[in-house]
Image (cartoon, rainbow, N blue to C red; front, side, top):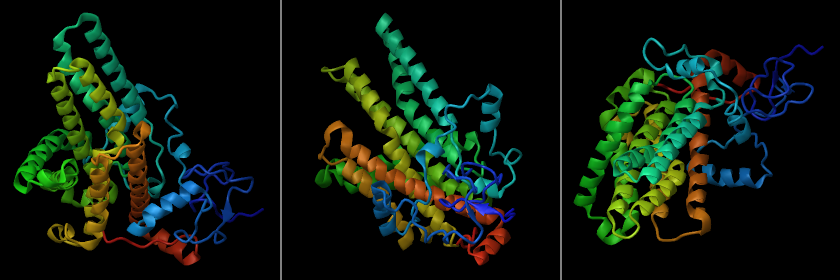
Length: 396
């Protein structure tokens, strides 16, 4: 009987237990032999699983020009395979009760595997039920006192659920809900303030129109994060996955506050009134995951990746590697705000696809960073054996 360790042919992860039918990392079917034997699979980073698929080819066209990793063995169905599994209330509380100095779990190689997020869906369902209840209450009683609650809950429902997804993707589990809440509320408010000042100082809107927000707001949100999150410069928050989460938190605050502002603005208009307000909340809620949250996450991660090279913060924001990646949210935001439209919000969905290909590529790189930090000696051994190809990252 072959006693050698076996590895998934799709993503290269070790197969455990050996008789497993599916990979614990990417969810790919392993077959009767449980994957390929050690040393038999291609070196990771050179392999091109599913290279013939149109979706994989499209994703490669996005990541390659940016110098990002191609998505390897990535399976959306496997990623979200745990969403419908029953969870006890105590399990949910323990799941969220992490990230403080006393509740951050020890770093392990297992944290470098693709997670199986599930709490975001429950958060979304809970928030939408609350919004639906408020909407029914308003329509039943026509009491204007319900309107502020409608705006607040409706504007935060989808952005908060999306933020929980980024919280779950942060596998080191080293960021607390307190830190996230600070960045959502204060980050959203400060980024609004900085952006409005930048609009006034630059006057870009006068000659670029709505697309000017791409330059102003993306700069304002990132500046807010770098000003507020001084704690993020601590060694314990040096993972690029932390940067993604911090950026998503500021983007969540900005997106929710902006949606609430638009809803209130339409409420005050003579034509439409409450009906227009509800339409605005609904449309912006559906599109929320594709916009500010993902954009700011990418921008923040761009800083974290350059900082991992030992570059000081002041130099990191003008580093070519940062500027190339920061150009992604700026470009996506710019195109989003143009007058060009496609049926059924096709433009926004396409831009969202591009954004999340970049996000998941950054998550994949972040997971490698976690594995390298957890067990650099083991990874060096695997690299020498030809089973993987990774480099040790300087986490200064």
